[in-house]
Amino acid sequence: MYQGQPYIKHGLGRKDAHRIITQAVVVGARVFGRAFAEAYRQASASSKYAQSAASSSSSSSHNFVSSGLTLDEACKILNVKPPQGGKANMEDVIERFKRLFDVNDPTKGGSFYLQSKILRARERIELEVREAESAAEREAEIKKGWKPKVYKDR
Image (cartoon, rainbow, N blue to C red):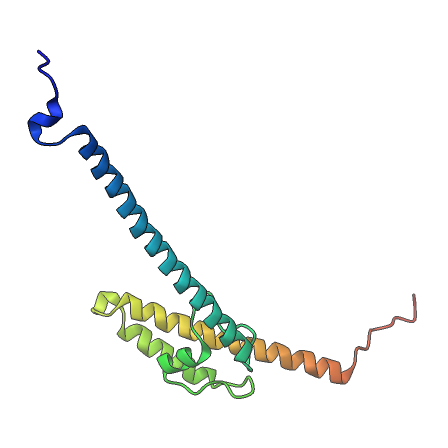
């Protein structure tokens, strides 16, 4: 049977329960708001850093690739000199890549993370060399001039 006010029996009034729920919602919203604001600040700072790095880069417009490695980081990982004027000793890069890639094989007790970083470093250096070679080819074609093949029998 119903015997009156069940909230008073447990020491909580009906108004107290609403106050506790409201307080929990307000505190949760405050925590969520602060976390969202901090995440926005970090994303904004990251984009500003990427923009400043791209604008100060003199060698390539693609300073970051999908892996996020810069050319300097890639050269440090493989312990090779950066390409000078688009020319790099690719035999040395490949030899160091193979050695480091095999040493860090996960089946031999190595690290998959390091192995993937080594792979991305080689890809980044190869991308830089390819871009420099294609730019050099374009420059050579511009200096030489475009001379279409004209067939006189048509």
